[in-house]
Length: 164
Image (tube, one colour):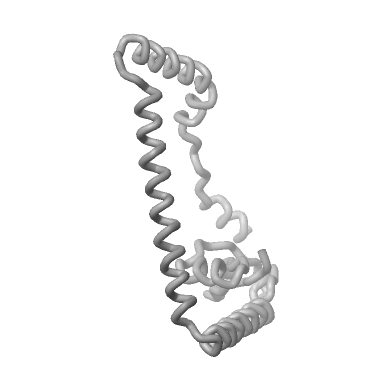
């Protein structure tokens, strides 16, 4: 009885008519846009190929300069770095990876996936996650679920963690 009362409070997302309009009429909209673009190109005296070529040149030059600057930075960094620095970076990254792995396994072990409250054995209801739960989920590649107890005298709130 108590569980049904909480379910009726859930709000359903109301689908807006706008996506349905686009789904139904997308072909007609595309045809109208193509016809208008064709009429514009016939009436206007511009050389489209010259504009496209100019745009492509700008894009290619930008990316060439971007990759060139990254390559020169990496070359300078490699020249200035000693072998002991590379070994040191590798050891630190390995230690950080191992700490993250241990934290992930501890989170999975300490927050089991159960279907009832640990205090009163009543049912659980999902509630919105906090921002920190989302960050933890992304960082450790786990799924964090936030719950509250459905028992009338129990105010337990907690999380459950599972693998993705």
